[in-house]
Length: 223
Image (cartoon, rainbow, N blue to C red; front, side):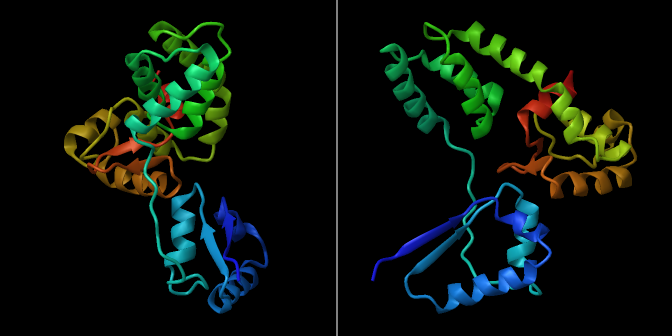
């Protein structure tokens, strides 16, 4: 009579398995019949997850409650990073230094961890210059990976992604003003934008602006 939680991360990868419908059907049956199991499904590809759980023709339709996770808030990172700094150097970092870390990484958890891992190798607490120098070094190392990540995009999709990378956030990507910046026709922007959002290259922020999801891709393409 114990509750067991089964957590399945990157669950969208199930859709790549040939027997996907059989697997989904089995999980749904178990989830509906069990008394003591609780399932948590998560993943990094929001579009594929939405297809799996919001398509009325799929086995998982209306099976679960949806919980959208936003990026970790700055105040929570401040406490967490300073706790780690005290363990490493027996002193906290300046608040502005932590804010610089969160600014360049845009609070993307993967890159916050990557950047801090490098900074924590230093013998003394990093300063502002250390943060920006280390971030520049890291993004320079990722150029070939970015090229590989965007290799499957069309010319229009790449052009739009580059233009969005050079902006801090675009509220009206189909406006004439932005169309001139991108050197693209508005219908082409609409088509390219739909693909970029579906493939998680671009996301819509809480204030309804369009922004490049991956800060490393944004840095590399904006140069």
